[in-house]
Image (cartoon, rainbow, N blue to C red; front, side, top):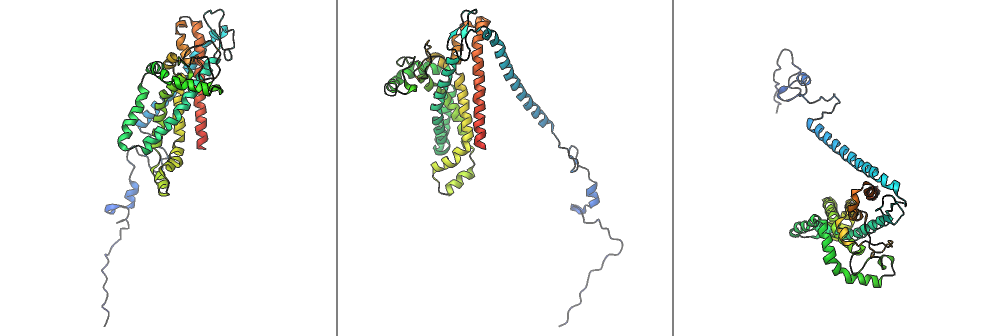
Length: 356
């Protein structure tokens, strides 16, 4: 068998165009591609300048303006408080930070201090926070991990609705309904745990209910929806991959919550708690109605009476027709203003420490 001769196709004579079929589709040549200019408004690969669209510039300006405006507004409030407080502080015959008395009727012999007011404010707020934090954490975990789908939305709505109730309604409920209901438990605590300073007999009336104990529980109910809402929203953002990985390794539902959900949302939980504490520190009307003022010194008992800084300002509203007398209450408000900044700074420090 002989091999058949191989025939090759004849080549075209003449010059060969090296640009044909090279570059892009439809036989676009390299020279043509290289000569194309970028579209208007789009920088070439060698320009080195980022294009900023008008919408981005507008949004950046609005964001920057909002941040600057809020900063200026807060600074203006601080300047106003200091400016209005100085005349009263210059007439004060007592140490403003360590004195327990409050005598402002005679502007020529003023003696007022914020020590008792500050201590009552801190104790009632911390007591409310201690009561609200674990309850809010449990509700957030239940809504995000255990609750059936048909119950999540109605229950979350009911809890969020607590934040819409006016504080004066909470005060009336706490004074007329809750205080009589909680009275037997308060008496039991005082009789059986009175050896502990927090439950010792204080300056308030346990039977009357106008004590820090009653006010703190009502305040805890008031700040509960704030902490719950923030915590719930953070827990929902837990990466699904982490949850599924824990389940794949054989973890129970509680172990998933303990090792995945809570560590992921811890900073949000702390942030929500600090928001609730901020509201507790500044709460006025509910505490104005529940707490009973007293002339006795504050003894760090939950059964003490007294007034917070905010409720004291509300109580002294009748004296605001005189700038010097009003300045004493403004000075107390300045302390509360600084206290909120301290609380926020402490919360940020805690959150930053958790992230490290």
